[in-house]
Length: 160
Ligand SMILES: CC(C)(COP(=O)(O)OP(=O)(O)OC[C@H]1O[C@@H](n2cnc3c(N)ncnc32)[C@H](O)[C@@H]1OP(=O)(O)O)[C@@H](O)C(=O)NCCC(=O)NCCS
Image (tube, rainbow, N blue to C red; front, side):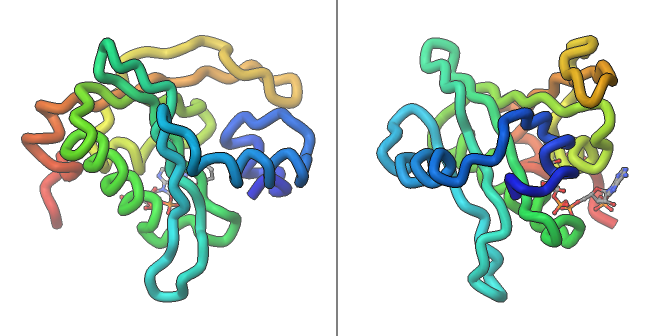
């Protein structure tokens, strides 16, 4: 995931690949009590196919940020949508959050589609928030609130 150029672009990940640093980071995630870093595991194969994270917890405002990333090869089979619904549902129904927000770059319509399918609503644009290979890219801020989740539980669009 961290060695894939397209994944780095889509997530705006500028840091150089550092396997030791990444191993130290992931092996310390279970000890954090102010964020939730989960692996996405495909049931059919038992393979880890990505990660889904609630971070930037703000207890005073009952809010969190959300991020998700699939390993290369995993995208496009509905796993991202399912994982998003699962962790966002956990945030509202089990953790009692009021607001979950995220940022998605303007050049990532696939991720934006997944967030919209799960009920995230665009609320503003951070203009030129990312500089990637000489291009200034906007970031769209999206959020979902607890009352919205209660209404549709991650399915705001009518099922076909
Ligand atoms: C974003 C990500 C988690 C989505 O997971 P996924 O498993 O690929 O998503 P799904 O298969 O559940 O759904 C993809 C949806 O996007 C749609 N889509 C795919 N390419 C698209 C495009 N170029 N424009 C618009 N929609 C697109 C698909 O048709 C599908 O929607 P549908 O079910 O209405 O047809 C995954 O692609 C990923 O990790 N990408 C690389 C890193 C990344 O972008 N992370 C997010 C940073 S904000």
